[in-house]
Image (cartoon, rainbow, N blue to C red):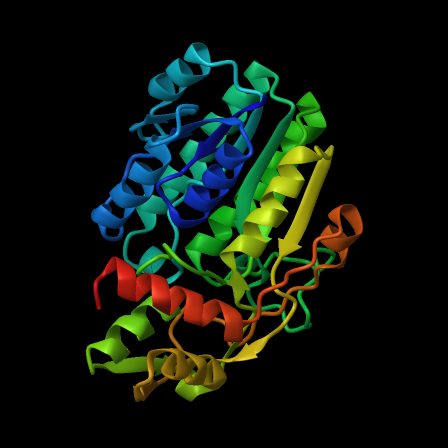
Length: 318
């Protein structure tokens, strides 16, 4: 039985990853400060489902508090670190940049350094497709240069990749960075398009459709994401960066059509210009993760969106 530190298990991807590890019999420790970036109750309800497992322990600390995080490493023999906690959101980084300094830089270094000291066998962490920035070549490949970020959020994720590379090189710490592509599904984040659109359509309110609908995203269902995360946790690499996406770029207008069909109600579409920090298209080249682990996403948006809508209606009694 392996003991995993999964930071941010009250978050969306962290919750699903921790639950899969617990379901297969592993021990999971989490550190999560339950910040108020979005609805705390949703985070508490995710955490409550994990607390039902005997082999789960939760600590409510800020990861930038080095002494607090050190105490967790002292109290537990941690074998593998899955660092998913971070300050998310491209647009929020325009108005609260210092949240990203603390959560995505200071906290990342704390976890990295303590993982080195604890001699963990693997360190897997969340990067983001946002690092591709102004890259025009599609699909986005891990071999592409990513030195033109267009948001502070993306810049901090690129910095994480560089920091991890340094620790892998200097201290032989196995690290794998995962560039996630627009993750969605049950228990998802309220600041993401699917959640915002579903809520608005059900309430008869307009939805904001940016760049006048001329956008495409590689939407990736959360179960496919966590399958990939756990494959990486189970197979340490000296240093690796991997795209983890659906390998399908979907038109935003069609994405909304599928939501409408799942809800049974038309959206009121409010077309707006492109927002600062946004990109018009994302599309993941997943050849490397497929080569290493046979990763093959299974879920189309036509299957995944109705599952989310069903969860949303049940959870919010909508």
